[in-house]
Image 1 (cartoon, rainbow, N blue to C red):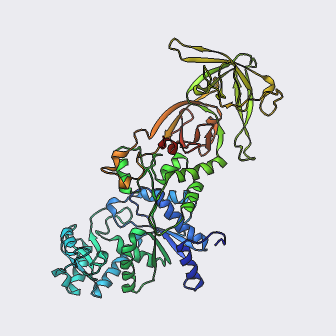
Image 2: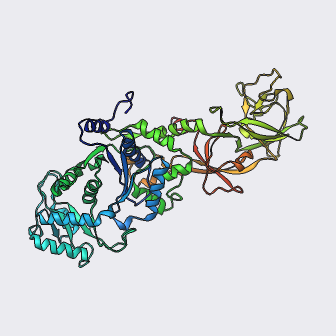
Image 3: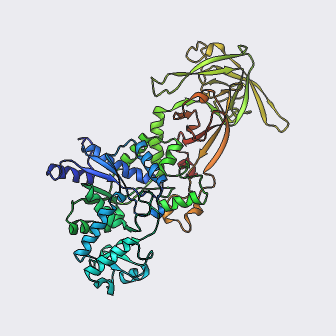
Length: 551
């Protein structure tokens, strides 16, 4: 570990364990349930688990907690693997809880044989009532006193499919008066006839998460099992199962999950947004999913930087979404190719340019001396932004207006001579002259101007669509908002804008990152084609949202 950076509490634990010789090397795991796409909260867990292993010379398993087949799908498995790889991590073993179904069943039989588990015929409502409350102990039922042979026979019958879904469950026999509600005879197995994406119809009983998780960690010899804070009450059952079975003593550690402003971190709620058509798909660029962020143009480097900046804590807090955007902006500034795109065009006619056209050269990225230059065609008719011309310029207006001069980016200095209007009073054309001695990089004109405008040659311009994204929700903290979370969906979260772009974009690679000058950072959408170029705004050049909220 680096001496310069202080260790978080989990790193301190691992350092002490290794120093004491408790382990020769560490093994962590990332254990998602394949019932949806991963989001930015999972990215924090991925970076933590894989990052811990990398820092201490260990390794990480990717294990799918596939114990609830009704909600799981191979589509989610594939998307999770893609997300983890895209973030820059590799797992040493790809595992599935379903790999251990036979072994988990055997563990359950061992608990029955020790008198520590029993088959209960009660309904879910009856079991909940019998558990009592945090201040009132639970009460046992007649099924709790079943003999070991009877429980073994009934459990075998559950596995064999003799009983209907919900007719019986297997419960641990622990302590109905425990102050920890999770220890009041928790469920270990339930009957569920659902086709499993890996085991098919071989099983009709499935282990509960609390039973499968600790035992799966133990089977894999996981040294440090890292969970979020809501699993603190579950740790006692995790330890109980390992102790009673006498298996490898994996141990659970908890950290604060990631909560962020202006978004939700619930796969159930994200699924609602998809199924009800509030967003296009799981990878809609407005979604907090890793696939959505990838499609929007976020970089894995920026997400890893974000996860590193927010750190690992023991206390819940809410992180400002702007911090993630800051990290994205910081990285893209270093790697994004610069291009010129005009969104609200007005024609600029250069009256004294008689060359027909000229190929100019513009730098791809001023932050990267190795990024080189690109060819940009220049002609006597250009598109400029309508906001870059003012009929009656104000005192500190440094763009185009009658008699005013500006530099055209990577081109020449031009001076406005006149303009035309249509019958409605809208300006349709601006006429200007250029100084041939003012060419960028070769300027001998001696003229100094304060403004620089981006532009696109009209006859070379390529039509593009810009998807300008904003926050998906309009309130900062959805957890404290009244009513249905969907009531706070921002109706202006997506605006499709038609624009003109320089022709270099046609031949740029699909994975290239762009800064459209004065517009923001953009990334080509997966549905984009050479005949229909579509770019998603990844993030603005500045935090426009925060500025807007202060008005």
